[in-house]
Length: 212
Ligand code: PRP
Ligand code: MG
Image (cartoon, protein in one colour):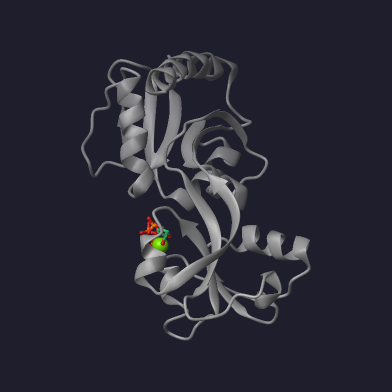
């Protein structure tokens, strides 16, 4: 019998909430924490624990059928991937921030400035739309340190509680987008697995209703 293949974040903020919603759907996953792949015992579901940034490509290739992922990651790397359900957790923003002691004069502030980011496509599209020319420095993590070490004049990264900005003496000056966790679907899902997805999605919708 066919199994629905779902990708969830291996570690990080989405991991726990993703496992929690599956559990609330009545799905138990046999979990050795270090395993990269696990099976559900009471639903035809295979769980793949993957790095956030890799998940859009797995969906495009049809290596997994569905994923629980931040909408911000889809916007950055998988604009053509369909969203089946908005999940209402892991809310965050993708924002521009600059050192607290700098005077912000509007978006033109960033003309000829260096911006450190893990979201190069998102920020570049935004700047292009607004006719601003900046220089991007792409880094994969700890972006907020960049202005303090002289690598950049500003940053574009995820803001959730705002505490990382605060601790690094930065202030949010523009919000590019708001995001939440979503259930994304591969265009290559088989008809058989689409049936399984319909079942799972029905359960997810009940859980979400119960949460509101
Ligand atoms: C994420 C993100 C921000 C921070 C935002 O980083 O890149 O830095 O969380 O959350 P906050 O507004 O609640 O502080 P994370 O800690 O996941 O690590 P990383 O940047 O090294 O990936
Ligand atoms: Mg960070």
